[in-house]
Image (tube, rainbow, N blue to C red; front, side, top):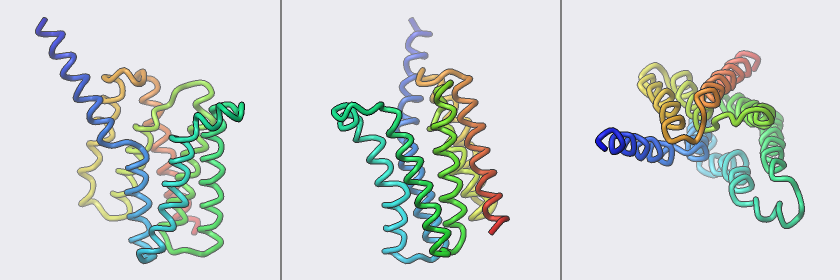
Length: 192
């Protein structure tokens, strides 16, 4: 009985941890920080946030019944989010916005496309992918004083597996995608 209660308590913690750091909220923090770092001002940051995180997030989270009514496959929502993120990345580069905005949005586009592609075979954990990218991004953009955030990535991996939302393989795939997304960010920063 004690082991069962302990397992249940661990699963509750894991679920609570996942709910406390949903991918959309983490992306909103990263996009807002990127806009603030680039000194876009309040309206610029709000426009960036709406175009890169809020509108695509609402489409992904809130349009499943609309897609069903229209007879469209549910996975098209993820494809649409990837297309919108790609359009946002192109706009950021065309507007010649200061870094880290274009590189961040390009990396998010890469991450979305990665989720679209890899989820055909494996339910890659977006939670693990996004938190991994986010903590690496904060450490790179704002310095090593933010490195303490790196503990969040293995905690999220543990959380998703313990809560039985993902298998260990799916969580590790999310970690790998988050690292690859961060690599895309570094590449875009170097290229620019």
